[in-house]
Amino acid sequence: MDDLLRLDDRLGPDQRLIRDVVRSFVTDRVLPHVGDWFEEAVFPARELAPELGSLGLLGMHLQGYGCAGTDAVSYGVACRELEAGDSGLRSFVSVQGSLAMFPIWRYGSDEQKDEWLPRMAAGQAIGCFGLTEPDHGSDPAGMRTYAKKDGSDWILNGSKMWITNGSIADVAVVWAQTDEGVRGFVVPTSTPGFSAPEIHKKLSLRASVTSSLYFDDVRLPASAALPGVVGLRGPLSCLSEARFGIIWGVVGAARACLEAAVDYSKTRVQFDKPIGAFQLTQEKLAWMYVGMTQAGLTALHLGELKDAGKLEPRQISFGKLANVRAALDIARQARSILGGNGITLEYPVIRHMNNLESVLTYEGTQEVHTLVLGEALTGLAAYR
Image 1 (tube, one colour):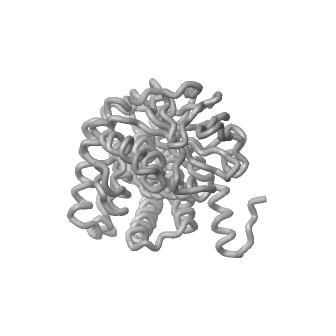
Image 2 (image 1 turned 60 degrees about the horizontal axis):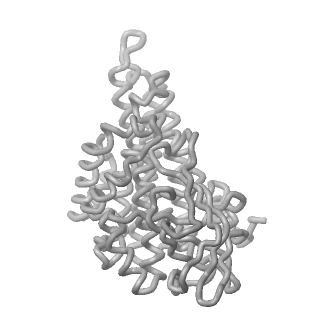
């Protein structure tokens, strides 16, 4: 599809190389199979993780420990191309790098970094991030998971829910209340008392592993606690990293839906001509393209702000709110252009549409990001 505003002309040579490499990987290794993965509710993480690691995509925006150390725009471009394949694929990379590796890299001890980051960057170890609970999603300050000191050890009890990679992870970064405030803990999933049953019967993000986490008197050494942060600032900073990837990723999902709709409109004949020749169809396609390109502009601008060290959480909320809504609207319009064929997995549209329903909610719901912007405009918090 033509890049009418030539946004990718603003990418540097290394960023274009990352775009092309990731796009080729998705084309060769993901697109031929992802419809089946979605239908069968499987994701071959152990098979794909080393390949993603060899491409430098795991923790790619982090420095050292085998990480690629790319700039923010490069990370965004990779997320865009990954999510053009499937939101579950981008979620795997995002959780691994931004939610599991980032807190260890940013707040962990040297020992924690040395133990986990090189293996995670190579795809030899998989991580997950435990913040959301069954009764506390948008309000993490109310979490009930608790870690209590017992001598020099910690005893962890509680549960988490909607955890990507949970049942396949080797390590979980778990956030819990303590007498000192919210603390993060690096928890090997082989620790006695830890369990992670997979959540089934999903109709969204089916090509992704989603689990609950349970902690039943999980005993951890003092060295398991992340020493560099106390309070919600820790997990919220991780979410900002992951949301940045979403802002870019959903542009890829929107592009895949728009490309499918354009191709279909040129070959589907009704009333003796392709449906793409009808004005109503062209109007849909034109507005879909405008929405996708505006989302791409937003992603690129926020990436440049991030690289300049000027990106703020409320700007991330703007991008997440605007871009996910735009991508979901594009997917729904594409589905209507494909008609009955739009609900089959022979085409990518219904898969992306269903996935985006989850992306609209996770990493901060549409409603919460709306209130973040409302507070930025009025100076008045309306969360309670």
